[in-house]
Length: 279
Image (tube, rainbow, N blue to C red; front, top):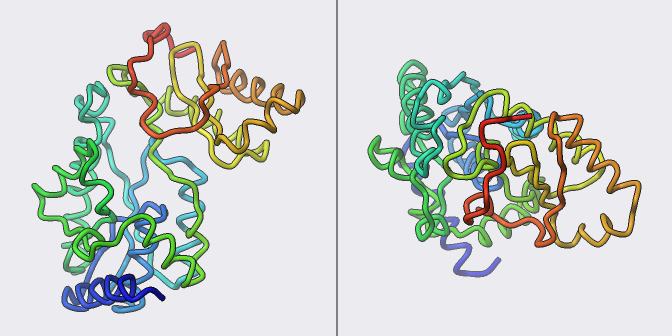
């Protein structure tokens, strides 16, 4: 292992041992899975995972999170969160993630106290610091710890260390909650989240690994990883399957984005199509 990487990992382990008892806000993504694994290695049963269950969590993400936690011997505590009850979350006007994380950490703090579990942590990384991340403000206001930032572990570092540890998440595609599929200003509702989830579930069933179903009213804009796009355009049956997945989810029109998958594309000034009509 690279000496610099080993030093960062050692810093993380030292931090976690000093905390003595931790509860990790755990989504099953690359970063929170890695943090949970190291915490369990250092603290055993004094480290547990807390996972928020809500309409914005994709069913397959929950299944994968449960499987990973079970595989590393971690206790996973599931709690229901109600971010949809927060008007600022539903309005989706640029600070949706703040309201989501505020709900998560408020619920997590209550659960952590009830469990006698000590320090609440989450999987923010240094890469997040230069981006628009209103959720980090919610964490700072509630003194939620970010051990990966404190240790200086970047996304590339975490993937490398996860691979060295034999973690199944080392090459897991980037993930985000289902609400990230909506452009700023488009209201988030349970019905619309269900449409997005159903569409992406159908796309995954076709064998596509990195996909996003971006909501634009009656139209769903499907993003597919650039290395999978060539297959899509070469395979008529696959294209038909994509169209069927979108229409089965309740969309009237289905498009494939020629630029492929990229983060944050829901908020690049695209024209919103029939924003008041989710069908």
